[in-house]
Length: 587
Image (cartoon, rainbow, N blue to C red; front, side, top):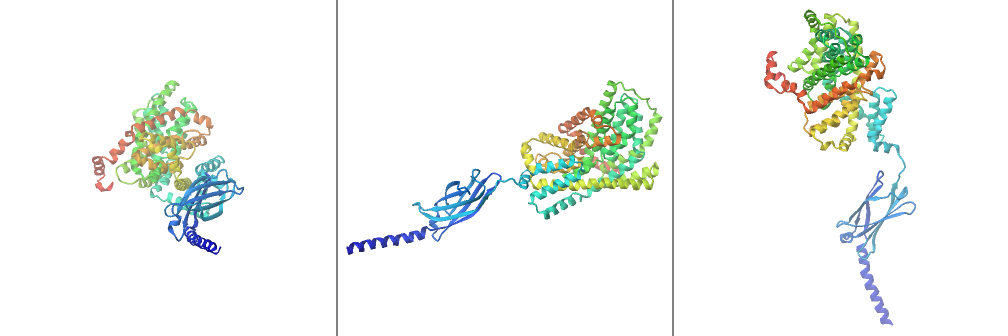
């Protein structure tokens, strides 16, 4: 009996001596390194590790992970730790679990399925309740767009929706941290900082001075003296006068006022229908956006960092082509409706008209010739145009007093203030879209990165055309140009060609229903109903879109003069020698 007891004791001691070291070796400490819950997709990812004195004890061990909700519904996973004791389980679908606390129970087993480590965590929370801020952030672009549309339809000026949309974007992107609104101020100030923007108020001022004076009248008389006797000559004169005044003002709306006001009564008296007259004036003003100086091209050049002088020269070809096509359509219209012709002007009358128009014709000569010849920059040309306008209307024609000049400058200041607020707000808005990666999402969605150069140009044309049907042209340029700029560079397109196409599309959209800005200018100036203003626009829009397509397939329409002016060294040397300039002046 004593021997049996002794044998049992020795056996128990041997088992205990073996088991205690074994337990000491296998016990490990588990850590929950990270728990990530994606509230959008309801996917849970868990990352953990193990640690013990004996490194071999947590290599390649089985790990059970059990996720349990507040109603004891569970999801179980089996993983294996790696050679360093790390383990993970990703993208666990917890859609079927209840909202509230989720406990994570983790156990590690040895090779005999004994538990060697245990960890319980109850801090994970599942919450599928609707949160407006998260929904708006998830649909950032749509949220901003809807806010802007609501404000626009409520009658707010465009600057308010722009600033409101930018503010909402920053609010959502930075989780309601209002201190980040300083970014809005920084971007707005940065948007109006480029020195080239000084040209904008100067061109607006010179256009305003000439609109109040006799320059527009003398340009009209010049064109009519040469073409009024042909069939449709009065309509051709209107289109030509718009082109010539565009070369003076650079503003479509100023052209509608300056040319439309005196010529509309004459066109009505000549037998043209009101719908044709209004459509002709509104759409011919588009030429002013292409013929230099063009405010739209200045804004594009600043945003896209493209040469403004090259843009100015590139706009001449498409502008003249549109003038020719509008003239042909006007002649066809006159024959179809049997419009009577006016008496042919004598050569003496033409000579007098040329003589009287010499002073106004000095504007395009100074602006285009000065830039073309490298005498001054676009900004300097704008300053010269203001001085020339004051000299012309104040001294030569004597149509403006100091009091008139003050009123004109005040009006220009108000318009400039609006323009610069739009430019600043547009810069802030473009920054928010860029920061949120909205452009990349849009471009990827339409697959533009895999498109050819022609396809990219068509997409750009459509985007700007549609945009300007609803929003101010300057805003569209500020918002869309940064979106397409990377794509333009990646496919190797000439930024001057792209700028010319964009400027044309912007001009077309400005005169296209439903909300083209030139349409509402005509409504205000001529006091005619909306339907009557847009009734005759389809043929003109078709012509303008045809020129857009021609520009895409025949870029030389825009680039021919540009290449002569800025690529042909011999031509540059000839121009410089005419003015006695050294070659380095243009550079």
